[in-house]
Image 1 (cartoon, rainbow, N blue to C red):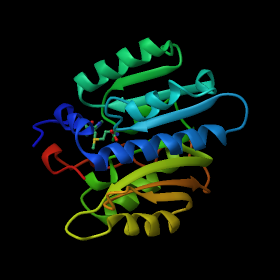
Image 2: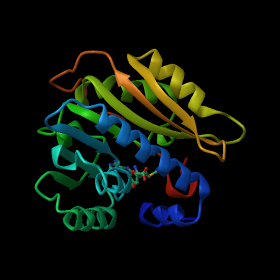
Image 3: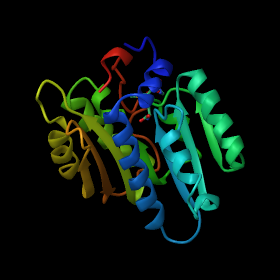
Image 4: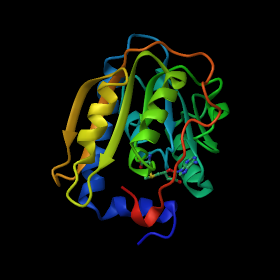
Amino acid sequence: MPKDWFEWHDLYNTEPKLQQRLEIVREYITYSLDASPAGRIRVVSVCAGDGRDLLGTLANHPRAQDVYARLVELNPNLVERGKATIESLGLAKQIEFINGDATISANYVGAVPADIVIVCGVFGNLADEAELKRLLDNLSFLSKKGAFVLWTRGHSNGTAYSDTVRKVLQASQFEEVKFKLTATGDMGVGINRYVGENLPAPKEQQLFVFSGVPHKAR
Ligand SMILES: C[S@@+](CC[C@H](N)C(=O)[O-])C[C@H]1O[C@@H](n2cnc3c(N)ncnc32)[C@H](O)[C@@H]1O
């Protein structure tokens, strides 16, 4: 059992569910970059971990030089690792990795509205459906109209939580573009498009509460 979120990332080395999830997330980031019009592509990643989904995609993507991103992550060791990857890719002028609280709207100022919003490994760490709705409502501050929102949601105790997420997204102005389950069958990954208007100022200073713990991560 991982004792913290840095250790949790080691599960990527052994857990097929996480490996398959990462593969799909990278595929969906590629899809979103390919579908973006010419010019600058703004990306934000909420609770970014070490950024392996976005950075691993940019390592081989022809639009990498167009991407201006801010990744927000609380664990300093993950941020350090992410920053080293950014340096190695030669993208330090365009990609910022912030060691900060991703639930606080101020940490996105200057980087939003984004064309691509990555919220992977987040929905399973919210207290309940009401908190998911609140976060989705607050994504109107992070997202341009038409932004791609990429998300993941694990299943547990025989409950297909990704079904609920898909329904709530559709009902909250996020139209489904793509959805896949991992081959393990217990992790959903989706892209939805925000069809509402961007809000230039946040509705709430705190966008959501991240209440998950690493040894029970979903
Ligand atoms: C399940 S992991 C997902 C990491 C990454 N998005 C991925 O899919 O590989 C959740 C991440 O959220 C981070 N986290 C938890 N609370 C946070 C907060 N308030 N602000 C920023 N990051 C936070 C943890 O440190 C951890 O790296």
